[in-house]
Length: 138
Image 1 (spheres, rainbow, N blue to C red):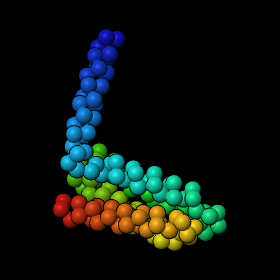
Image 2: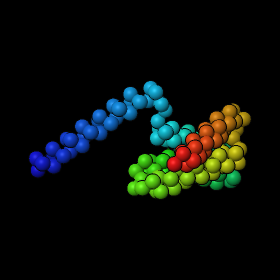
Image 3: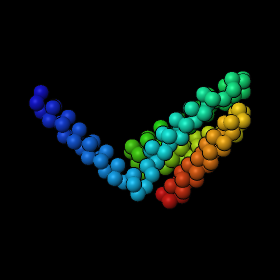
């Protein structure tokens, strides 16, 4: 029993030290895990503000799935078992970012939410470019 507690404590200390390392690195570089998470969250919030038309409901569902998939596949890429697996996950991230951009472009927001749509389209494009660059470098 005490042995399992010790393993938990060691694991916990390792996790805490990783968190601290991430925080200090954030000053220098934006964490892509956080960036993809924020993108998915902002897309979800954008969909909540869309007028409830038949097309917006369907586009919204697809946008939530695609933007969430960017974040989840990037997390999976970081846990990849091989370089080939990593590259495949990054390609999926790029594909899902491209799909997110499509659903954003097709959505029909209220006039006051149009600037938010443009910001999200820009972010989707930047994510596509980042993932494309990662694929080319590997």
